[in-house]
Image (cartoon, rainbow, N blue to C red):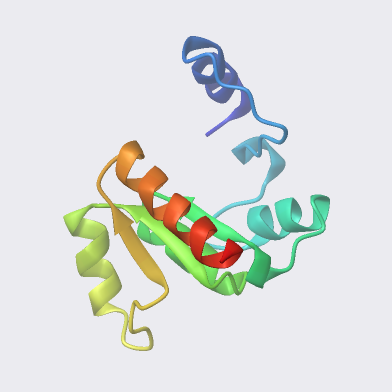
Length: 115
């Protein structure tokens, strides 16, 4: 969202992030620019990056940034739009139900990589 709304929500929910990217930076999805910006800032390659989002635009931006693991909140509309994209099979997308489910998925990935 814009920086004003983002700052309000960060304060309201007492969130802190090292980097916050807002619409004011003109890094719009579905273009991958915001993701590429963050990956460059932290010197990450696409294969070292995961994407977490809530819409088909997050999936499209992640794919354009060549990020191989995309986590999207369970949403029937996004699932239907993803199925309708002819060139994609959706194997790079994992749907999660809520924060706890996402945490479990990420924890299992971390365990697989460390074993």
